[in-house]
Length: 217
Image (cartoon, rainbow, N blue to C red; front, side, top):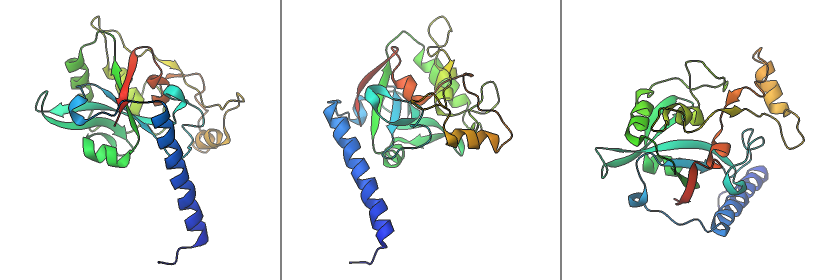
């Protein structure tokens, strides 16, 4: 057996326990196991983290899950084409093979928009944004995009209105106080925390009435 520092073993043990707990939570909610063939163009892939972070500290996903990312299912080549995910990550908006996305995010619940919307047009808009820089500051109205902002801007109903209207952004925890992380994050960059500014987040999006959670990958 390779000698592993105690601190490393402890941290790995904590991470493994978190993963097991999350897996238990997913099973407890009886999400239908989905195969690739079950996925539709434009489905939303919500990634659950196995460790708390600054995003999950101030947001909540469907059924209380720690959701911190969302991507858009797209099949290159048509309905039976190669499955991939359009997503906004730190490197910018990109197209990621589905298997790569799932390897990076091993706990994924799938949401399907349940209102009439133009799927093809919405996905085309998302593809148009490929190459756009990531919005590291989560600010509205600039030329960069974060994950759920990409979905919000691209998904429109048959009348051209946003499927996901903006919400007031929240950077506070259950006590109502902006967390120290976000206070430092913005103040160290000479910015005010955009508390209450219009925006979106993947956890809240997963709880919208316009989204039906159909299962898990």
